[in-house]
Amino acid sequence: MTPSWIELGGALDTEPLAARPTPSHAVPGTWFSCGRGSLARVLDLVRPARAYLPAWACDTLVEPFAARGVAVARYPIGPDLRPRALPAPTDDALLVVIVPFGDAGPWLDDLRRAWARRLMVDATQGYPLEGFPDCWTFNSARKFFGVPDGSMLWGPEGVDVGAAAEGVERSDAHLRARAEGAPEARALFRRHEATFGPKAEAPSRASVERLGQLDHQGLADDRLRRWHEYHRRLAATNTLVLPAQPTAAPLAYPYLPAKPVRHQALWDVRAWVPVFWPECEGSPDAFVRELAGGLLPLPVDRRTTEAAAAELCDIVLALQRR
Ligand SMILES: Cc1ncc(COP(=O)(O)O)c(C=O)c1O
Image (cartoon, rainbow, N blue to C red; front, side, top):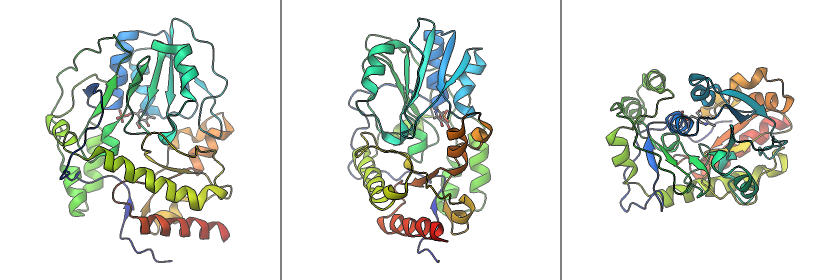
């Protein structure tokens, strides 16, 4: 099997500017440097004693809670990656719900009503997503676009989020190295990632400037189109229950085949499908262990052509016939 692409997926390169930019959000929120920074601000405003996080949440998401000594409990998620068996809301608790890969539909409405200002919608797997008027919402724009940093936070209507603290101007060396195919790109990316933490600081000016000059609608439409292409070919073998139509642009197409496909088999053909999140492999929850080991988040970013997505479908299906 020889794929026609040279390399698919993996870290982004410098985000090209659009000839005709379209706005990212009808109602802008406040920029922070990363998702943890947005979350840090919410914790400092809400000051919860405890927080409920999905059983399938990475260590990175826990950082802002750990830094502030907020007790964290986990709740289970179902095959649709939505919450199951949630506790009742209390005045001292914050509920964090991850929007699964752009699936931000009406199922969130009851939670928004019940938890209101005690609900934090983590939109790091779906973009763009307007902030909800009754609860907190944040994204991690930096994961969707080739910019050094950036996460937008929206507060509930009438709540002043406040200004971000002064931040640092982050380099885009890893993005340029990736664009040039330089071998040090990966090491630069790792070093860059290590500069982030749970601090409510502002992003780089260069990131905000670049994010303002993209065709957000076009990029979101491209991601949704790729999602649908995968879904058409793979839904029959996908054990996850996915919506017919995601309402926010997905980070990836989540594929959990009944017959596992090893990540290494994809890396061998230079399809860089990430492992989300290896630290959950020791989870006491059997479904979370299955996700941590077996989920294939298939790439839908601007570099994934229709032909490459089709070829990747052929490959994952062929690997299951072996
Ligand atoms: C679900 C989820 N939420 C939040 C974050 C934190 O985002 P950032 O890395 O921009 O701080 C991550 C990071 O991996 C994540 O996976």
